[in-house]
Each structure stands twice: as structure tokens, then as C-alpha cells.
Length: 123
Picture 1: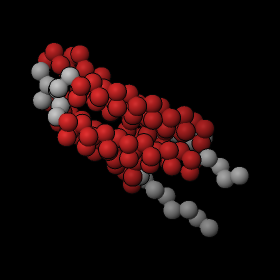
Picture 2 (picture 1 turned 135 degrees about the vertical axis):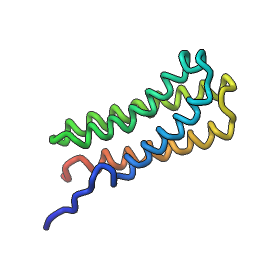
Picture 3 (picture 1 turned 180 degrees about the vertical axis):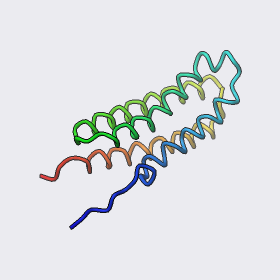
Picture 4 (picture 1 turned 90 degrees about the horizontal axis):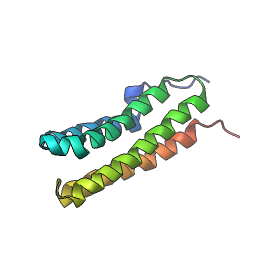
């Protein structure tokens, strides 16, 4: 039986990471130069790294190599949570923006964990 091939763009975790990148960019664009330099660059880099690592892992052949990149994506997701917290704590984003973005990050975290587990060979 042949498995259906799912393109990268069809993966829910990839689509979620792209959407988070768009939302992060909207936050970043509202920052002044100093805010971008101190926190914004780190925040946008961490968020964009989630999707970039998912994409790179998807392109790898061996499952262990793929999973390594998915773990990197998860690490970047945690870094993004940290920068998001600082942005809210320092009153650079509204509480509502923080809560909505955090909710999206947490949902992606859950889905990424499920996806990583599904990449392992069945025992």
C-alpha cells in the first residue's frame, strides 16, 4: 500500500509556523529602531527559525536527521516564548496580543510534539 505524499506546504505545523511568522512581523514592524535592536530582532529570528527548521528537517532523508531539526524548531519555539514574555513585560505589546500569540505558540508546540512522535519508526 502506497502512502500519500504530503508536501511541506500541506503540513499543519508548517502552515502554523508560517502564520506565526506573519503575526510576529506585524509586531516587529510597530517597534522603533531601539526596540528592534534590543528585542525585536531576537524575537523575529526565533519565530522565523521555527518554520525554517521544520522546512529543513522535512527536506532531510533519514528520520533521525529530520527529528534533530524538529527538535531545533521546538527549541526556537521556547526562545520565541521568552522574547514574547519580555515584550509584554516591558509593555511593548498589549496583554491581549501576548495571550493570543502565546496560545498559538502553545498549540504549535503540542502539534510539533505529535509530529515528532509520528516520525519515529513504529516498534
